[in-house]
Amino acid sequence: YAGGYVAVGTVQGPDWHGRIWTSPDGEDWTLASEVRGEHLTSLEQVLSDGEQIVVIASGHECGEPRDISQGGWNLGVTWL
Image 1: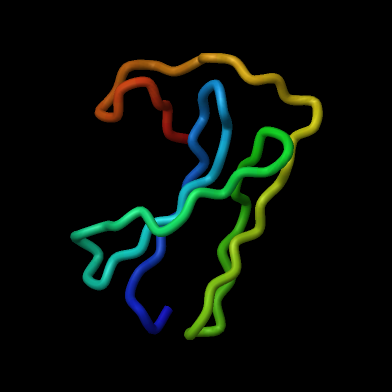
Image 2: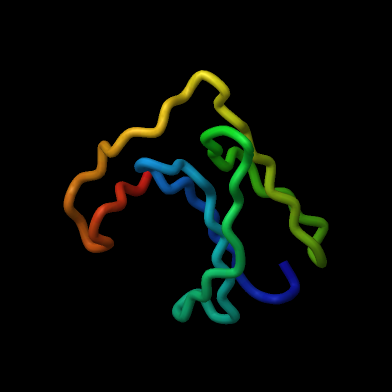
């Protein structure tokens, strides 16, 4: 989009939620937002018209919080 780059991901763990990062150059990233719903939430799509972005998320009503994390570069979080 016009402001640079956007990356989205779903954080899997006791509290599934989405995160949105932005970067002016693709090297330095800043957490721009976290997306949480009433239920466990995952991010599905990113749409852009070149100026604005829209992130489509899904809420998983049947999901139950659980800790299924595995060790990695971000302790306690598994990236999907």
